[in-house]
Length: 250
Length: 279
Image 1 (cartoon, rainbow over the protein chains, first blue to last red):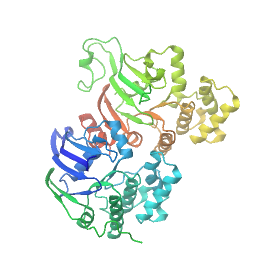
Image 2 (tube, helix red, strand yellow):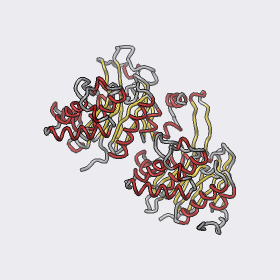
Image 3 (cartoon, rainbow over the protein chains, first blue to last red):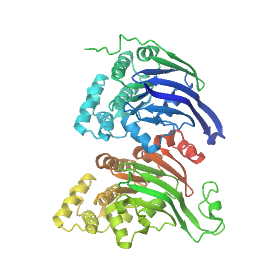
Image 4 (cartoon, rainbow over the protein chains, first blue to last red):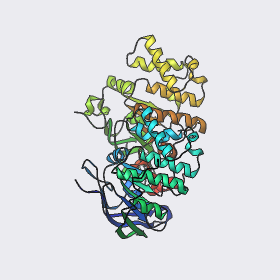
């Protein structure tokens, strides 16, 4: 089995905006890098440099128009995320891929705890088991218990972000894509998210993510990719602050 | 052998009129029309193909006249398609085109294998027989004969669709639009169809009532894992319900993909316009 969970080669994305007279935007140009299983690759670069575009290409919210992104599951099956069929991609999203956006896409009239639990239910878990798991994650992320039964649309941005993180983590994805998942959190709650992520790293989850703050990235990343204007300008390994990884609070 | 899909549609098309050699040039998104300027024929839809997997929901979005409802009506055998074929895993193990079915087979397909909920509840319900009677009618189609069994099942379905139990013996003509729509869903669900076709289910309903109907459909997805084709002009409905989406314009599919991809990375000019006018 490949030591690389992700092998990205020449991945490119260009947008043609017909409603703006055919304006062409180069979102990502020939990105090439590898990610080892169970490691975190951090993305850095100014806003508009292509971090989100890269993450969305890997999750196929954007359809790449060049290159490949080979994802090898822990069972040794390889899929090209850039070109695999739609049904296969949907199955991968259910079973192996997770994506945390900056903003929660709220499902109307579904409570916080059910929003978090639903990916597990969709995968066949009983509602009770899924809810128990959801509550565990929400309390790990310090989300006040009084909010669990309310609608996510009523929550603050920071609270919604934690719901979003919990919703992605509950299905224990093999490859987790993170797009500034803590941008609206205070230091304490950021720490809770980072701690949970480092536990998942230790358990073998592979991650690619952008963080708005450098300390979080230093704690998690064993590799840093710099992006500028849609180009990968460097791929460097970085020293993780291992003291933090696997540390427990209680 | 078992097919991975519950429904496969291959090259489906419907033309109203005799057609001529110029039809294909004169219609479609490039021509900006679905009627042929030469012979006057209407190409309501052409070359529609897709696979629907168990538990999957496919969205079809487009403006009125794009052909999306025609696709559903052909699949439900309300209309005779001009081209193409369709296969259901529950019909001769998916090996025979449903458009070649005999009249009794067609009745069976419509009564038991598929369900179509119409935009206008009056098209799917008899508004002048009771809500329970509407459901009974559908159950009788598949030879459920025991009155107790029928009342049980009707009661269960109306409960699921949140129609108050004391309205079971009322006629839907006296119901609100939202409740009529929920009764129609209960009726369509009565025989546990393997494929549910929903045509503009929430169009014309008040926003709060729309919400109730959409919640119900989501519940059917989550709890019964029923495969669905959802037709709507409303991208919000499609986003909420469908994992994959096809965009239709002037009778043709101009774009298809994962729903979030179609919405966030639309390729076709028409889809870009549609998405841009969304918020």
